[in-house]
Image (cartoon, rainbow, N blue to C red):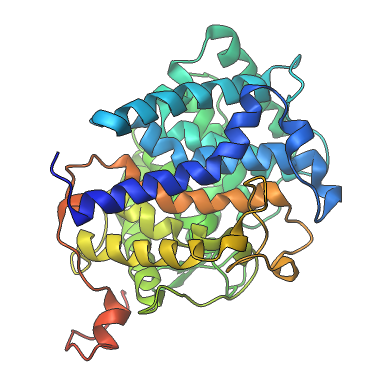
Length: 384
């Protein structure tokens, strides 16, 4: 393949994604994550840290692991990390493993963490489940079912319960619980506040939870079940249109220099705030007025800006809390080092082949860069 600016960009994304993931997956390969994971802030979150780190890492990497069509060095890297991820799942779900993770203890955080791992299964059913050894499959299914003991809060947490059931359905389990799915889907129909945005419960919150959780999970839950639920088939185009609009807004929030508004809670998930935009590209429902090359360059600007600060990692390669470098005061009390790995969700478009137009379209300025360089572009409009 002739090396171009676009292929260099893909290479950079892959290397960045793997650099972030390596501490989590390398220690799981030797079942020593429980010793290695740092707990130098919010140490009381230790019972949840490992599953948070694995689930969120897997959630972002899954489409790349599942993607067919890689060649050369990328194909070799992909195969290496496919095996490493399956080893990680084994280590996490084997009750005899030193790194066996918490799927059932505490007040419910384990449900949150398991849901991100479940989302990885929905995004990559072959690599994240079908190719596992039979005993590992049984352990994995049992681990997810253990989270059913938790009653989710009436908020975005409803989607965590629904996502676990979506994964169990994908895994071929007959006892998936559609009641949990229906409760989540029906609730978010009521919580839609307009112009591509949902409330998180009865109220709207200024934060990125529409991207961290709501749009990505709601879209994929409906995609998963619409074949057996005719009402989901009818409702899905509306949900996708809302998600596309929200993705468009996210693109407009990326400043000309790659910075973006830091607002609301969980901002230390860094560029994970753009998961909904990345998913719209991956699943090909970007609005027509938003070219793939433009989205790629916008996301690339954010990734470069955030990664520019070397204090994003500690001396052992673990993520530190912050948006730009190490800023622990930005981390709420429910956040530990494992939580930070939701930043991997920005890399979802790596699940598109290198020949997809997301990667082959010429570089284009994004909305803010066009405006602040004096270009004349069309004005923005809300959706009905």
